[in-house]
Image (cartoon, rainbow, N blue to C red; front, side, top):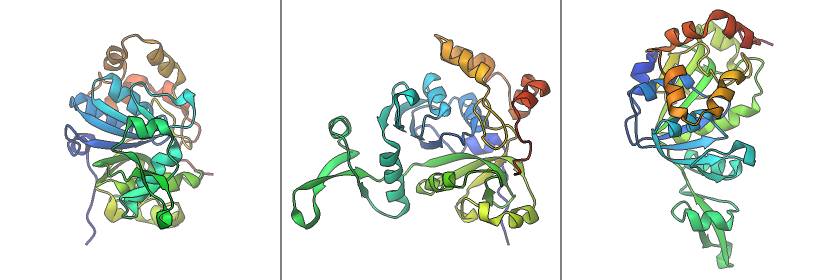
Length: 278
């Protein structure tokens, strides 16, 4: 018998205790869950950010994160307080965990060998010919992902109009012990079967699913809506980011109230494709 995995944001956030390590993905940010974590005053988190995730910056600004490891390839994606590595290195570390390894043999710059010797080190080369660099496998406690659609049983899919190259990165969520997914909509078994090639995870690997329309706001969800650039610019311009977040992002008690506060007209102005179809 299949087990239903639908949960509320409050229930899902309760699975992420203080001191957890949290895996985030730029472009698939579960902002509704991040807001709930902050409402619950989560602290001492370690963040692994695949790309310049706004969620990582927000958690750090609000005092929830002690450490951030960010996989970014340009200075424009700088996250204050983070240790920055290339996307290739961070992805290799997660892939090593998914594949059962304890490290990934990758080229590591000298600055990382010096800054984070527990994560990046030199190891003997093949056939004992000198040394090579290696990056430790990462095993986050929890991966949180915002997806397009899901069913009650943990089948998670991208929209038909999505670029499936993103799926390879999102599947690195399997490195985590717990996978929590928020979804734009909960759909039927028939809808899942019709789009079977858009699937992301083995449903058995998904711990719970939270329905969250516009759940990535104020960031973009490429197949559904644009980023709320006005709000993001206001946030970035603030000297006290945490105070701004408390007033504009965290004052509502739940996602429905948050969306009501934004208003229908604002949400529709951001919307590009209400159902994510081709």
